Image (cartoon, rainbow, N blue to C red; front, side, top):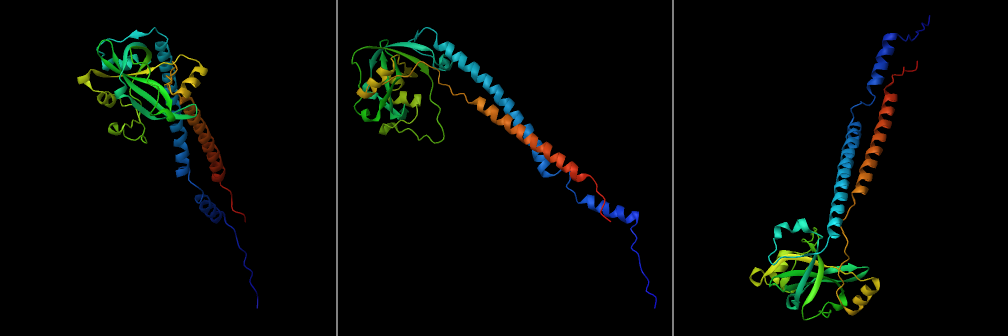
Length: 274
């Protein structure tokens, strides 16, 4: 018997069909990964640009506040327009009056150069009959109930006009009835000190300490409130945000380019081996 041999013939049509099927299995250009990597660089670049604008705004604000701080001190009128106080923040002011120790408040806890303590808030009954709130400064926690009350007669005070402190999510509610003040709520403090009926205005002033470091240490040891330095303490972290967002934009853009080049290589049709 004759044994017939059969030869497998590889036709062009079949080769094309196989090659077509092979290429169809490759990843699509519009995959979720590419879409995400295409969006992230644009989004983070926009955030970086926004933070750059915020940085310039904050620098201008700090320059403006420092310019206010360098001006000569002003004497506050008897009746202060509370609505315009934000325009005078960080302006130096001169006050004269008597301390109302009966309505003094401890704001805290606070930390100064590693020491735990409080800020002493004492109403100042001015010679013109009105009363304002003065943050006399920091005392150690050991002197919370025995700090130096200062003179009983008239005193001269130099300070800076401020507004209510910003309260974050984790700050507890003040408890005036228990003498616990965690943040400077000026309206509540003014009400605690007697309110409008007693001539107390919701005006908050931080007393300035012009002494040197040795004086500050001496005050701290004797329980004398230490006022704040005459400086602008506005936080400015926008530069770090600018660097972060622009860096993330550059990183994800690089990843996108590498992924596109990889996909481009994969999409090149290669004939199946015979």
